[in-house]
Length: 219
Image (tube, rainbow, N blue to C red):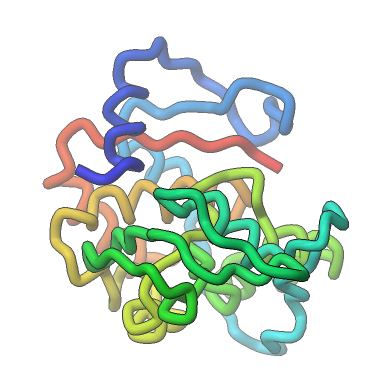
């Protein structure tokens, strides 16, 4: 079981609260749904459109807190399972990372990509096309939730590309329920929509995910 799955199991022991994105903010306790299925059903259904999408619409890997470390470096530091070696200008030299998509341990950061859980193009399709540039930048550099950005092997990230769960799931079967929860959590956090094929795929996946929980904090 991955660290994220363990966190989900621990969440099951906590009292559940009902809250909607309109009722919560960054300073409230995270809203929680009793099941992955309920989280899926909470996402608004809408058709997707890629019209006008450009990756440059999402400024990413910035140094938002001006501590000298980019968003990529911040994720690598946070997710390393041992103290990472950090060189000048916050260059990450080594560490130990577990890519939960494929169950691979990596010690060279050059072998890792930082995956946007919900890809930038998918976010655009699902509502981000209507956002301000500042909100898109905040999305692309979201360090406020560990579900938003994840260090994974470059191979799996590039095989995923901009696909949603209807066409791509992690190659490691044991990771798929965690992945579905992370996907739904991210869409709920950012008030993104879901299309019909995506929803149907997630429903099928959730049917085999037992007591997997969804936790999110709206922005």
